[in-house]
Length: 458
Ligand SMILES: [Zn+2]
Image (spheres, rainbow, N blue to C red):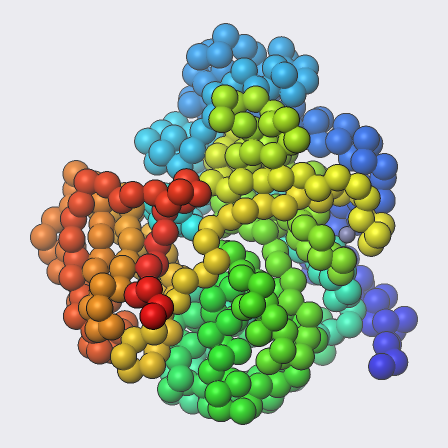
């Protein structure tokens, strides 16, 4: 295919320079940094870490006390050994100290909180840093995609499958007519979002029509949603050829990856992200693991006693170097990591890591043939974080769903009924839904909590 990048690239860059200044500056800076030798990248990373530590110490009540508890001040952190003397944080920390972690200058701006329950099923609230973080992670994603062979000036329109995507199109009543000419759409790749809860056998005709009419040739979204979409389109024999698929969120089984690749006749890449730490790692064309983004994050892999593991493998602990509003420092993201040694043939200097995260996406199929994925539940429960600490959904019979919740002190009977009726309507009343309040939900042998448990296959 002849690429018209020599026209598109300058046009694209001009557009960024004029209309997306902060993003453009970050994209140029990160592109420059990625070309540096690894030792130089690490030096910069350490500088950015020190800056964040000092800011958190100066501007949040929580982190001042956090340093005091370790008998340290930020300027005494001179290397990784010193850093390891600071306590680890986890979701419970951010839930308990929510107000005190929120930095004082940001409070005046009154930002909108974000919610997540991620792959752990423990909902909590946090804030993103719209000023620093959004530009950096968006720029990182554009560079990550280039490593997958998808350049921004290639103009590939993308279908985005998320719980509440930006540029969401409501497809439940069929397709609305398009608005007319837009300069932005002519220059840049379009992103068309549909909500994961709209991916149903009933809507699949409309989705196929949307893909054709908007010429969508890339697909990006939660593993289980991309998988379900592939299944439904394939069953209707209307799966289009895509140029790429990128999956985020829960793990992806090799057979699911192969299936998606076969249906869409394209490569499938993984992006390692969490709502509170976007774009931590990405697969390049060589697909040997994730290249970890050392510009935007500081990573540690710790063994059971909190030391760096022997071969470097262990629990992944992350510091988000861009969030000055609600700092995440030495945060136990809930995944295991194992550094891969050696250099990647793609030429990227960022080190490779294999992460063992989430479970491969579990899917429950209702008696009516609808796939239920975990995103509906994580999306649903994150807005109930006041009432629900943890949840798990178990299919106990072909037509019975047991929803286990660990309630907070504020839980009320009305909320339990609300959960029951919302989930029943989601499964189109084809299943009985039982909600049970429990004290605890057991962990799997991997240390993970399984959020969606289908009936064992015969
Ligand atoms: Zn590579």
